[in-house]
Length: 263
Ligand code: PEP
Image (cartoon, rainbow, N blue to C red):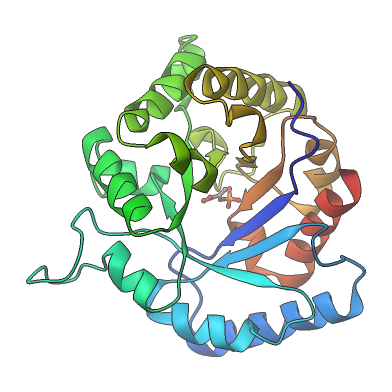
């Protein structure tokens, strides 16, 4: 089923970047691009995910951008509420700071910080309970793809959270399909392969929830201005989660523009 009625959604994941002076410049450049460009409010949702230390300041600085820019947290604690958990930021603390969107399950969290399926499910559960909107990341490794297991791995990652998502909470979930072998490598899944996986994800979601056809599916993995138009033309690719290219305002704007124009 085509997701063409879904508003496109492009999110820049700044990861552990940039230093403050460069962040200031990036924000100014992005505001300028949005001011001078022709993306209309509602044509494409735009988000940026800065490091947690910068969430509130970035949100404040983007408040007067020409169109709405959503500030997204890159992760959340698996512990809810408040308490003696050094170094953690809970969903409730994010909500209390007016940060209402969060990435969960990014492959860098899964691989480098041992976010297992059960840890990820706890994060999802608490984030949804706090009223946050989740961008849930899934994706297979190169070894898994070459072994013909890509679909199975990705659908399992969706099943991993389905037990903790209440029926009405699917409205607060976006899925980002990010093949691990394409993240930060310059290798992008071909539009055909990405669309094929997105169609499978949509089919899987539709079996789990009646809201499946309206859940936004983002593609991530070396998305650039140069490949965004082709990816945006795919019916089940409703947007992009962009790493490296989001650190350049012009590239990021062009990716958002490609999605805004395509749907
Ligand atoms: C990401 O980390 O979410 C990502 C897609 O990175 P890049 O665009 O740099 O591959």
